[in-house]
Length: 128
Image 1 (cartoon, rainbow, N blue to C red):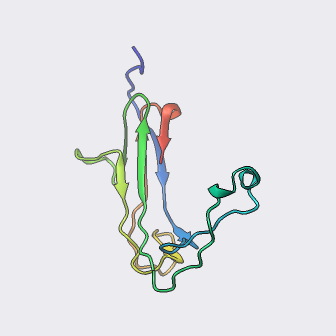
Image 2 (image 1 turned 90 degrees about the horizontal axis):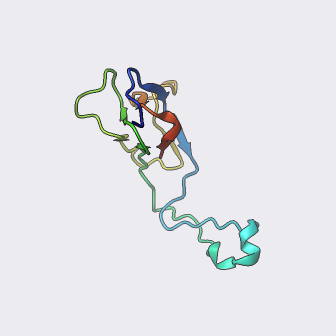
């Protein structure tokens, strides 16, 4: 029987701290020097400048996908009974250029707790 029954789950703690220089809505940053551009230039698209009126409010979702076994993402240990394999953090309103999520950032108001990733078979579990 695979995967074999497990008495303990693998635990990883993930703290999302910040995101920097996220593109605004309808902004495109083609990579004209990429290797594929020489062969298929249409993959790079056209450059479009940032839209100053398009301030974004980014949020992050963390998901685990187990090829086999059991996995879940939670912000509390022990995990609640309704814990799932996906957790979305609250959006950082109107700050897409320098969004701060974590409690590890000094003098920051966000109370975003660390996420706990649990998997019975971490070798065949994908973090997305």
